[in-house]
Amino acid sequence: MTNKAATVKDPYFREARSFMSGVVQFFSRRGAWMALQANTPGYGRGALYLMTNRGGRTHTGDQTYSRIYRIHPTFEGRKVPFAIQVTEAEYTLHTRYGDVRFTWADEAKLMAEGDKGMGLLFSRDGEGYEVVKQRRDGAWESPVRNAKPLLFKGLEGSSFSFDDTWDFDRFKYTELRGRTQPNAKGKFTLVVEEFFYGAHVRDSYPSYADAKASMLEDWKGFLSVMPHYVEPFEQKRVETAYALWSHLLAPSPMTPNWMLLMFPTVICSQWQHVQNAVALQEHTDLSLELLLTALNRQSDEGQLADSYDDSHLATGGIKPPVFGWALKNIMSRRDITKVWPRDKIERLYIEAGRWADWFMGYRDNDGDGLPAFEGGTENGLDESTVWFDQVNMTSPDVSAYTVLNFEAQRDLAVALGLSRKAIDDWDRKAKALLALMIEKLWDGEHFVALREFTHEPVFSGSITHYIPIILGDRLPKEIIHKMAADLSEEGVFLSEYGLATERMDSDLFEVQGVQMGRGAIDPPAEIFICTGLWDAGQKKLAREIVNRYCGRLMNRGFSHIIDPISGAGSPFTGTWSRCVFTILSRMISEDK
Image (cartoon, rainbow, N blue to C red; front, side, top):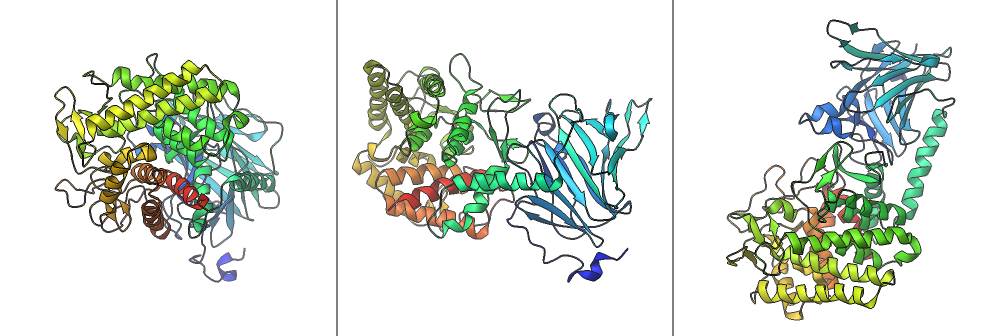
């Protein structure tokens, strides 16, 4: 057979470009719990895997355990090197002999096809008790340990089979090794389908072309609903939307609402789902789903789980309560009674209300009327220096969030047509807490934290002291002006790339590894301060910070964590920075 290298300009495919960064490392479709994942697109350098985001394989501490199978392209049965190129609906392996292509037919079906002579090899070591099973019509089931069963089936006259490596004494298939066989024309088409229960063969399957068209149609439909932005932000509209679309996880028996990945293998925490509900609010049904998914794991007292997935529930801590901020943002742009079912709004009212009240009932240990966070992980910035030498701190951010939560409950009560008493009760709570936090936490220059029980004021170098700007014009003008002046000072919090989470002249400033709160520029601080400044009438400053932060993301990649001095970013990107980019770009673009 003719070597393809003789017919292409570069036999190593160095000019092959994917449509956006990061997609080689994670190629999936809205709703799918699996993805294709490779470390690099370069010829002969990439290792390609079919991976899962099922919790049973992502919470082991072994980052490689999420990889279900390694995938090799083959030519006439032998493994060959490849380069990777990705479009919105197709993942292509270029080899010197031909191409292999992948697409997603739906949220459960990965499909592949190959040029003449090309094939695929799936392999990995077997685990204890692990087997593969023949099914009808030449199909094979692979019940993946700690994940979900997969069905492999050749289509269009091609076939697929696993090697027999069963070892009774070791009670497992020692190696799971399956490969495609071509049809009479020398080509193959393959479907790999995930099942929640046991796998079974379907009566019919889509063609590869129809599967690709379905994926592209779903993506284009999603994108068409997303807002357009003013320049230069419009340049990254497609990339940010695609990352959010491809990281969405469909409901399952253990996760009844849509969810979103923060990174591959890591599902968003409670407050991240709420933030993404704001980012995706034009998708009104999906936005509601993301709000409800955060409420699915709630204690009788009202506490929400930090995070959960289909096999894991984290309840030993919490994440900040930002339902109020989110609901008020969404309700300022649309009448929720026209786009959300009443019963779902009622559920939001009841369960988000219990979450709002929980902080007054279970995080005010000293009874001073102000809620507290117990450690920086609850504050959401993790290493925030407010908690440098004490865990229980009445920090100003949690009071600010709770004021907005009470206000949003009032707004929901109005939308639902509830009694004047119900409306006034929430309004009274919001105003009383706002007045008390200003009285107790504003020292004339700053919002301080108080050590619980002793009430000793603490003012650190943390951006946490400025999160109360999220309250916008509810704050007195003199407080707004002082906070804006502090945040405007170059080289303190304000850097060339956005706002640092710790003063850059602080002795505690440190940007190491995955640290979020000791100085790095991190998504949640940017979003709450920028939207708060905007609502406080400080649009010029908000716009300047947005331009710096979003400019850094556009120019150097959507890093999750950014060094405010050098602009260097973490190697992992994910969805959080793209969520924030979407919200801030919308905010700026709506200003006429």
